[in-house]
Length: 187
Image 1 (tube, rainbow, N blue to C red):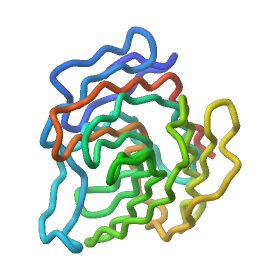
Image 2 (cartoon, one colour):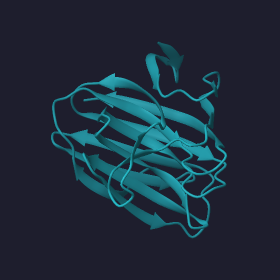
Image 3 (cartoon, rainbow, N blue to C red):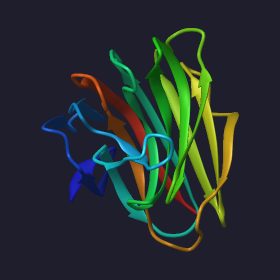
Image 4 (cartoon, helix red, strand yellow):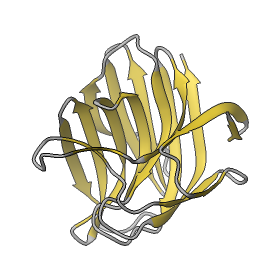
């Protein structure tokens, strides 16, 4: 178990080769990593770097981060994961030369939605709130709190979930990500 963000009990699923938890969580995202299941592309990947704690019941996950995005589909953000075919990730993704707020909901098949940003955000905070059978995804850019709703999705209730941070670099050479805050409040 890893000590980070003032708490113990953190662990990796697919740890990156380079990372540190001395000042928040800093990692270099390995190339060829992704979190996707079947839809449109026909492949499934469960190789993204996931750093979190296992939590039961309702919760609020807040993740603040910056990234040095450089290549198509470079991504970082928050994740709730039951298993390799049931999860939600939400963050910033570099797509077609621009920055996008991105949410993928996966229940055997991935469902992707994006919202273009008109500029790169210096810092982004995502909040995923699990309440009963739903997860509400909110975000805030730079110093704004995560008050803007991006998505509401079904998520199986009453099962333990890995809650935490994620990063992936599906097609590029990898990139640096820094998570400056990661909080989980069980309710």
